[in-house]
Image (cartoon, rainbow, N blue to C red; front, side, top):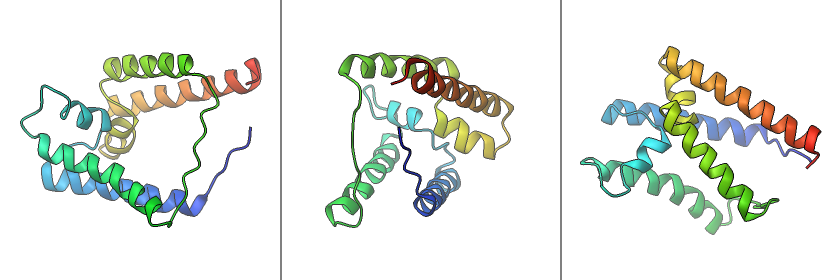
Length: 142
């Protein structure tokens, strides 16, 4: 299985994610954790749902606009059936619930704030990812 690494796009994208996280913290005093942001726009709505909705509209709308204008192409493949996707989604949901957040909240914002809890959570996320990829690619052979 080939990995398509694009260092310049990754650098620009990472910079924009960091900028968005810094601006959200500076303007609203909030952590840019996608799980927490999405949770605030799912009923029952949070009292501060409007900034959450705006953030999500930007996160989804900006790439959609770039694709619509022909500025980028997003190749999309789903190499597994629906059942593993559902099982994986449930596992991730349990993980973010017990981990107190997701990779964006802990990995991007928490590590930047030197949060010991976020550093530990990110190490667990990454170790789990390494093991999963190794097992899928080299043990199962998918």
